Image (cartoon, rainbow, N blue to C red; front, top):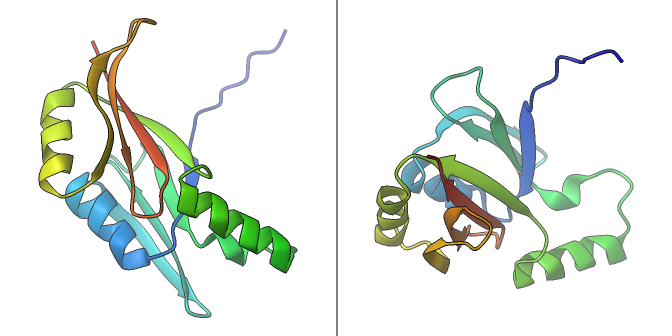
Length: 139
């Protein structure tokens, strides 16, 4: 068996308001903006930790995907509005500090810090586009 040397590089989450996405990911979460690219009135924003080799999140306009039908675009918009389209799990050594910072910045709380029965302490928020963000506490 050959072992492959792979690492997570990017994760993609949709946004429907680039300025609100920046306010959340840059200002509330403290991520660095690595790239902010506009094309035809749309924006792709890449954010991540200060370490440029760490994985990043690409915040993208969901309707820009080539080949989508109008019905598919409507379905995506409906799922985003319900908060059932995108999700990601982040991790921190200080869950209480991150939770307090997000609450102070007006983030929508889904779950306060909780000890889960499967051994993780975490909390959950929705970003401005409705994406679910779970945040695990690292040991």
